[in-house]
Image 1 (cartoon, rainbow, N blue to C red):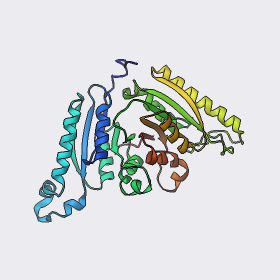
Image 2: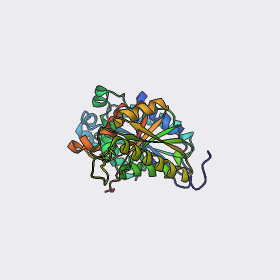
Image 3: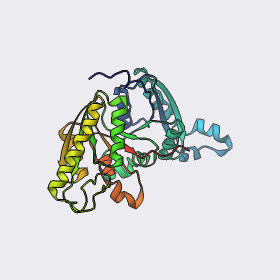
Image 4: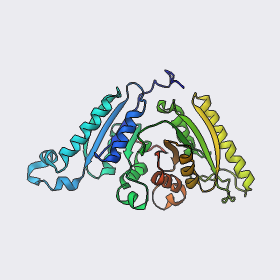
Length: 308
């Protein structure tokens, strides 16, 4: 379907983090494939860690140290390659070399430019990959003030929206509904009925128990999720998108990952509390598991944090 002028009216500010790696190249390709609204800005940034700066003599001063830090030439070359690639999209492109801890520097830069979205690459799926190579993406998703897109596909053609009736899922739905970059994508709204959790309403995707405080039967749980998926799809269709609802059964993270594979979804969109530490065990475990193990891109939408 075509994008209406009203949908394309709002420009976006995007922070794209790159380190010149193949995985970062996937993120660049994905950003290039997306139809950004007119007037959008893409800021391509890379980070030189303090450890590299420390290798340069302190007598040279901070400005001289930063200009001669090991790896800086490679970082600038990666930025130039990404910028040249994105120039073809017709949006404004800026570059920035940041210093410090990668995740912290990316989060701070996103806040400084009032980014609507942060795009980061992903280095594989499993435990080792996520601990050693994917920790930056996970930390940015935890702490950024805006949604974070973890890129694993070179393109953007079909989306799977995880819904459960919680405020966090509704925020994700609003992003899909209002951001013009979703206007041409077919959307499936998927709600996972975890019938093993019959002591709540079964709305467990974001750790949200709803307002029902009595045990529910498996049939009642499935019925409630049918309503959630259908209502979300109806709202998206009313907003001019093409969407349909689907109910899945089982463990939320497992079923969302399976559904994304079965439907060839290029991106999973999901809301999360965005909490860290012990509280994530309940509230954010589904989003974290999906983000770490999905074979497609994942857009994590969380409660917006105030800019400071």
